[in-house]
Image (tube, rainbow, N blue to C red; front, side, top):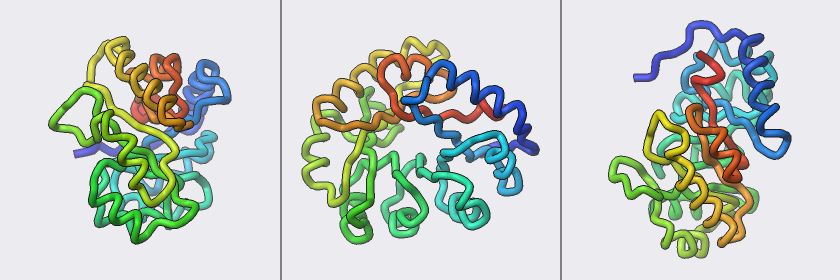
Amino acid sequence: MVELIREVDPDLVAKRLERVREVTGDGVEILVACKYVPLDQMGALSEAGVALVGENRLQNLEAKHAEWGDRFVWDFIGTLQSKKIKKLLPLVRLIHSVASESALDQLGKHGGPDTEVLLEVDLAGEESKAGIPPEAIADFIDRCPVTVSGLMTMPPYSEDPESSRPYFAELASLGAEHGLSRLSMGTSQDWKVAVEEGSTIIRLGSSLLR
């Protein structure tokens, strides 16, 4: 169960954001994972200068978007249930986690010419995580009825950020091989390594908010 933050300090978040931007420069988008942030605290993120947020659950995304929709650019970063794609698409810029045949089917039914998605790639072969194998990327791109603009991956969790480096390097290589411009990789514990390996979107939560 996600433990929500009772109160977001916009000044603290703004300072932490600035420190991250000093490392990333302007070429990397900082996505704030807002699953920890209750509805009534989303305004504090806007006050802190947060522009891009990502939600993990459709229900929370719907509630927050209804109240704060114009304040942010919204992405969906959670495990994707294909039956929810119809409701997700009008709310988000990107879905980061397309990785199933049923998702392709629903994107064909509900996507449009402006719909963009990222393919989630499983580079470690972890049964507990979603994702397509690297050798399936070309086929998924060919059959995806909307634009695939990039790749996303989640390396096995480790306290050592360096353990993520080979996975990020491999994803960057795969992105270049398939001509994809976006790489969503790196979270609070390993984002610096991800940036060094070419990430264009880092997904930060606890390092900014707690």
